Image 1 (cartoon, helix red, strand yellow):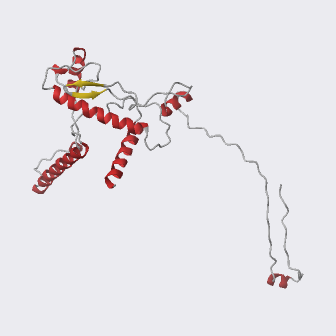
Image 2 (cartoon, helix red, strand yellow):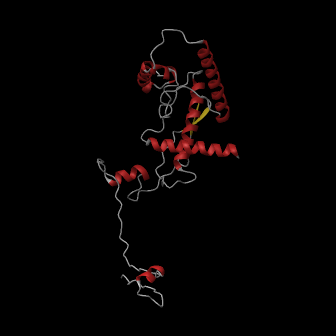
Image 3 (cartoon, helix red, strand yellow):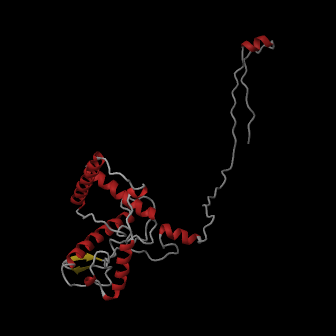
Length: 253
C-alpha cells in the first residue's frame, strides 16, 4: 500500500514567483510500501555432471545420506598393531565418513592426516629393521614394497614388487635444470660456489626438520599419495594446511 506524500508548506505562502524562489518550501515525504518476501531457491551448477544428487552429496558429506549407521573415525576404529621386526606397526587408518564440512576445530580429516603420517613413520621404521633379518612382512598388513627387499616380501606380492622396481627404474625424476638447454661451456665459479652453498643449506634445513618432527625425510615416489587414494586432492591439502597452522600456533605459544 503506497501512501500519498505529505507536503509541509510555509504558513504564509506568497504566490509571487520571486518570493517563492527566496522562500523555498520544505518538503517531507515518507513512503510506506508493503512487499512480500519471495522464496528463493538456489540450484548448483550441475552442467556436465552425470552423477546423481545423492552421489554428489555422498562425495562431500560421506555415505550417511539415507540413514546409514554411523561409522567411526580412523582414530577410534582400529585393527590393533602387529609386531614387525620389533616395531609395533598399526593397521592402515580408515578414511573418515562423517565429516560435516563445517570447519570443526578437530576435523576428522585432520585427525586422519595425523594417523596416516604416524602409520607411515612406524612402517618405515619396521622396514629399515626388517632388512637386517629374514622375516617376511605380513601380506595383509600393507607391506611397503618400495622400502622392502625381495627376501622380506611375501610370495604373493613378489611379482608386484618386480613390477614396482621396474617402474621405479624407468621413471626419471625431473629437475628444474631439465627445462633449460645444456651448456656448452662450464659454469662460472660463483655459480658453482652458490650451488654448493644451497645444497649445504638444504641439508641443514632437512636435518632440522627431522629433529623437530622426529621423522626421517626420504626421497619416495608415491609415499605421499599412499593412504589418500580415492580422496579428493583439496581435502588432503586442507588437512595438511590445518596441521601446519596448528604447529605454528604451538611454536609461537
